[in-house]
Image (cartoon, rainbow, N blue to C red):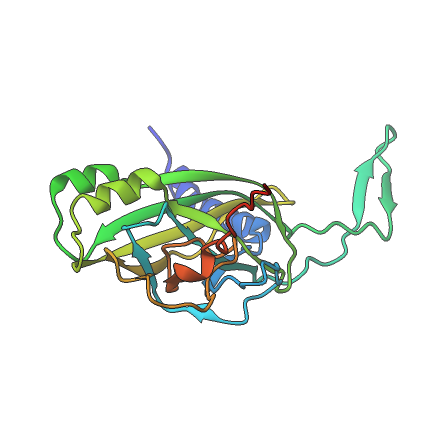
Length: 251
């Protein structure tokens, strides 16, 4: 039979143990590293790669009559501060502490590993379309974001030719539909902490023929970095090769 002293000690010891665990967890807590999707940047016709977009798109348009996919270009930024200089301390064989001063390790640099794409439709479409537009992951390699605001524009193919063909079969010429593309990035810090971005939602209007202009003569979207069929009017006549003169025959 347990004594009253044991019970009293047990009642006191349990809360103290819980406080010790909480204090230990608080002491080991790491500063969260956060990657933020600021918005969808508008690609430049000059095909240059700026560190930050000069203009953001509030929504997108895809013309399924001639598009082959949709490429979103989100601006992704590491919004944490740089980690402080740390000292390294080790134990020698005689248990004496050895300290190395001035060792600097940047632990808040983020290495992006994948992007997750999800779809939802604000216009009712057949169930066959829903079966094609399922969420998927895109692996990302070689993309590093420095802390304290380091960012970049990162092209992400959110729709491929199979997606476009499916939409083309249900959105007829002159019709429109509205969809929402949701994007999230995942990565790991150089201190081996897993991080993820905010969920960025981007509305895209689906049309059939609204961006295909057969009358215009000026070149507006002929640069390869603006895929035909998305976001901009595509001037057909501007891309036609000049007429060649008939070959002359000498007699």
